Length: 151
Image: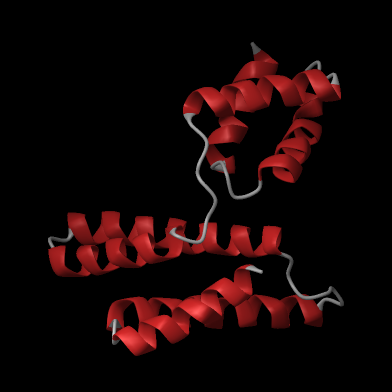
C-alpha cells in the first residue's frame, strides 16, 4: 500500500515537473529497493508497510542530522534542501503521537507486560513497536521507558 502511494506520487511529481519532490521520491524508492534486496539476501520476505515506516524514519533522522551539520557549517542552502526532503518523506508517515500520548502508551505497555524493572524493558519496547510503528520516535521512547522502569 505504502509502495503504491509512493509510486503514484512519483508519477504525479513527474507530471507536475516538481523536481525536488521527484528526486526525493526516487531516492525513497531506491532506499526501499535496497532494503528489499537486503531482506531477500537474509532469506526474509519483502518489507511490510511497518518495515517501510522504519526505513522512512531512518531516512528522516539522517536528514535531520545533516541539517544540524549544515547549519553549524553555515550552509543554509543545503540545510534548506534537506528540510524539503524531510517534508516530502514525512508525508508518508502516520501522524506522530504527542508527548502525552507517548507517556500513556508507555504506561499501558508496562501494565500490559507486567514489567517490574529494567530487565523487562525489551518486552515493553517490543509491545510499543508492534502497536505504534511509525507513530513515535523509539529513541526518545526508550529513554522514557527506562525512566519509568527505574523510577
